[in-house]
Image (cartoon, rainbow, N blue to C red):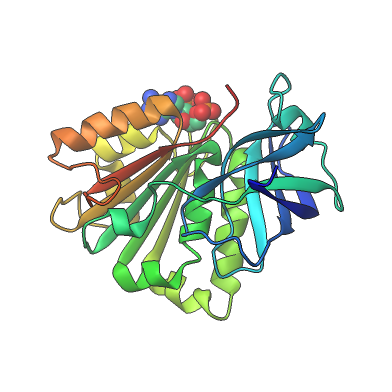
Length: 257
Ligand code: A2P
C-alpha cells in the first residue's frame, strides 16, 4: 500500500450510463507530466484493486481528475462508478506514459486523436501552456459512437474557451473536432477514414497531412490505434517512445479487461 497515496473524492459526475468522471485531492508529492497515467483504484479487502488511468487534470492543478468507462462486469469500474464525495481512492505514486511532448520531434501542428475515454490525456495536454508554445495549431479529434459520449470533451473545451488565461490561446490555436459514427451529427465518421479521405482537413479549413510539420498523439480503442499506426507508418511517420522522439506517439485508452 505504500506505493499509493490515499486521496479523497471531491466530486463525481455521471455523463452517460457508461461514462463518468471524478475529481480527487492531490498529494503535493504527486508529480506527473501532462498526458501521463498512473495506477488508480480502490482498496478492496485490504488490497489495492487498481488500473491505469490517464490524468485528465493538468499538472498545474491542485486537484486530480479522471474520466472513466463503467463496465458492469469489471472488478474495478463496477465499484469505482459507485464512489461518492468523501470516499477514499488510491493513486499510484509513480506516473508514466508515452503521450508527452518530449517524445515528439519539433513540429508546427499537433494532432490529438482520441476515441471514448482516450480523450482524457488530451484534456490534460490542452490545459498545458507549454503545448501552445511548442505548436502553432492543435487539432483535438474525439470520436465516439453516439453524441452524448462527446459531452465530457465538449464541456472541457467550452470551459477552456471561457477561461481568462486559456481562452485567447484556444481561440488562436485549438481546433476541436468531435465526430460520431452511429447517429446523425455535424461531423460523422471514423477518425481513420476522416484522415485518409482528408475530410477532416477540408472540414476545418486546414492543409492536408504533412510529415514536415505534423506531430500526432493517439489514444483510444486498440482497433483504431492499430489502423492509425499502420496508416501513419505508410505515410513515413515514425513512432516516438522513451528517449527517442518521433512523429507520433500512441497510448491505448485503458479499459477493463
Ligand atoms: P464504429 O462505431 O464505426 O465502430 P468503441 O466504443 O468501440 O471503443 O468505439 C469508439 C469509436 O471508435 C467509435 O466511433 C468507433 O466507430 C470507432 N472505432 C472503432 N474501431 C475503429 C477502428 N478500427 N478505426 C477507427 N475507428 C474505430
